[in-house]
Structure formats: structure tokens, C-alpha cells
Length: 151
Image 1: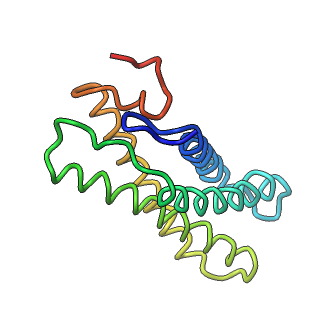
Image 2: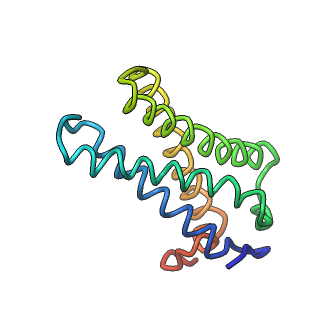
């Protein structure tokens, strides 16, 4: 259940992949008509769950130890990875929070969309970094429970 020196535990994996799926669903549903019941079911509800997951993920980050840092990386890249993780959690929290405010007050749409765009960029940076490491240096996907890319 808890993280080890080599991999993330079940709780961290569940929060990570659950939040990733939720945020993709929310992003894909963002262009639906906001008067449509589907918008509520596919955008607002998953957004609220993503907010809860983001808070739990941040708490779990402090409760459980982190696996060892990836080997064979320069210090600037390790710092970039840490910053990317922190910024993803922060921007996820801000996007979902501004989404709730937008839903309740009908204001702040520009900020919500700007933060959403920033989250997409951070997400893509994360994915590219993971695959870059996976296919050039080592087996990082295994740390998050994906074993079919084993090297």
C-alpha cells in the first residue's frame, strides 16, 4: 500500500491514475454546452472528484515517503521533475477550485481557461518526460504500476 524505495504504492498509484483519468475526462468534456446535463455529468462531477483526489494526493505526498530519485539524471532534470510534480498538483487544485467558483458564481471563466491550458502543458511535459526517460534510460513506468513497457 505504501511507497517503497523503488516504486509507488497502491494508494499513490490509485490517486495518480485516478486523477489523470478524471482530468482527461474533464478536459475532453470542456467544450460541451454548459446547459446540458451531460456537461454536469462529464465535466462538473469529475472535476469535483478531481479536486478531492488532488487534495488527497497532496496530503499523501507528505504522509508517505517518496521512492528514490531516478538514476542517471543531471540535477537540473531532477529539479525540473520535482517542479513539474508540484506545479501539476498546484495548478490542478487551482483549476478545479476556479471551476467550482465559476460553477457557483458564473465568473472567472478566463482564469479557469488559462489555468486549464497551463495544466495541459504541464501534463504533456510530464508525459513526454516519462516516456523520454522510459525509452532512453530506464524503467520509470514500472514505478507507477505499468509493466508492459518493461525494458
